[in-house]
Length: 432
Ligand code: UGA
Image (cartoon, rainbow, N blue to C red):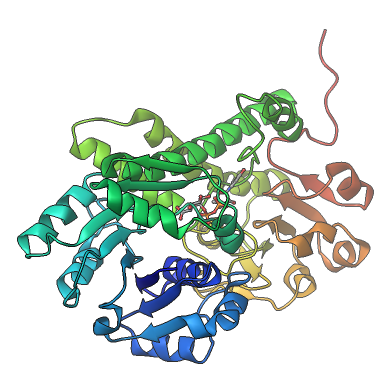
């Protein structure tokens, strides 16, 4: 078992730290924000992520939270799990990474600095150079990107499709790979640049699938096909697979939007115009707004109309509102003069524009509403098409932005229903 230091007690750092502790490693998590460390010492986790509080509690004797960088001095592996947000130019802001390197304590032996944060290709080489020029040639460096999805991060960590380890020195890569020896997963060993690119390319490919199926959905709407059936049909092709083919109102979150811009910027900095990725991003932006057209189709001008946005987080099982489609939708609706009420079982909606009323229950959100929009596919919304809801609404219209409901059942229950890429209730007779 190893002693692992983690820089950054954010989502990535805490998931990584608690999972390494669960695997039996001793873990020291260091952050610069005193309130955060204090709260964690009391067992308070600052975000909603299944299993993390339990893991932190169960492995408390192997986990230390600290503000003091010297507490990680004897760790064999030092993981960088800090934010790399986009700058105004679209590049990733690596200032927090460099702060970690500048603050490294006096390190003995051959500790290995491991990059978990998502960084542009070439960062490892720059850090290697930075370490050498600071007299830290004895500190190893490896890239070990994370592929954890919010809401299922612990499960993803414990059952990974693969673990990617890129290193300059074979032995450093061996040490990082050994940390995961308790897990059954293929280990992809490669150079640092390739490890960095694997992370960016994986996310870009997933986004491409989403924008692709969303465009197919839009064509389905124009032609009378059902995207849910189409996705099932193409997903059975083993070369394609069934994942990330759920059409909807677009992706959001802390990773996809940021990582796609970073990869696009990385390519253009190197003189390459990444056309496909640019289209993927544009399709996603337009997709978020399609709900507005659908509402107008059913309700006419939206001024004075009351719309309930059901689900505010960017996806279910998280309270994360970063780049959530609900924010764009709420802003557009307010700009159209609509009254907007939002509901989410976990997210508090503070990130929404001023003027949105937050309801504490689905029923309160839809009371008197002219339309209910399913923005996030929370399990609680699966039973939305019921009498109580229909009777509470001024106009029983559901726009299902995640294709969560069965259209026939919703219509049977007396709702006007429209999903994404699904045939309208009455399909016109084909002309002969
Ligand atoms: C994503 C990746 O799935 C992780 O592998 C990666 O590690 C992570 O980004 C990251 O870079 O850190 P995450 O953003 O948590 O994870 O969420 P996803 O479950 O991938 O969903 C992203 C967005 O795509 C959500 O808004 C979701 O609603 C949307 N989506 C997903 C669709 O619209 N359709 C789909 O078929 C799948």
